[in-house]
Image (tube, rainbow, N blue to C red; front, side, top):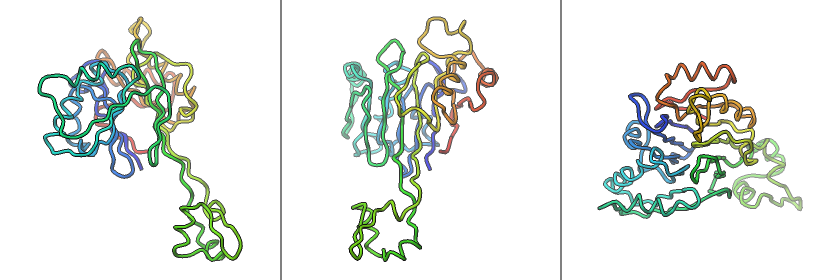
Length: 294
């Protein structure tokens, strides 16, 4: 089971109830993955997230409300004696700006930091993957699809017994995907249950409404979409989305659940929730410290 923890759900600046953008994903093995790191993110983590367990940080774009918390977070990691590599992913063509952020006086880290620019190529890890995709925000910006690899079903114990599969044979079968017994080749698919499809989460970051997405984004379990504004009148010519537009994207992607975030300070949570009911039934308005298990 994974858990999504919303650390910051406000647009542009903090309010008494909302911090600037940041989302933590707690993976099955206890690893934490961070998406964006606005001002005050490390304080938001105190009760929910261990900074020392953060392995990767995925930044959607380099506006201050999405990255300014990085420096303080890294300094705290240093003070706590971190030695583990920290891998930070940023949009293509933004490394110069990231280097400027880390060039403030007396900033340093006693552990390795690897910064990688990404655009639209799928990145494979041990048991999950990330698919960056370009969005429309007036500056280099990307969203992310997080996906867990499909997993095999459980071994059919009765069938394995009948075929003589036992002991160390299971390890061989796992490694080689097949095994030979009494002259017969047996594949792992023959003796296991139905493949379990991996979960998928889409996070848009800040963007205008998009009309197309990478194939990996469709039929996602959760879509986390910015919904800065309630009306087009409030939105004007900004590179952001309305609640209605976020609901339209959820339908386009056949998302099982829609979570609205990056809420403008001008609205109460109840106003955003009421607006969403006009267009979709599966929408939830994110609030700071809200947790979603998946």
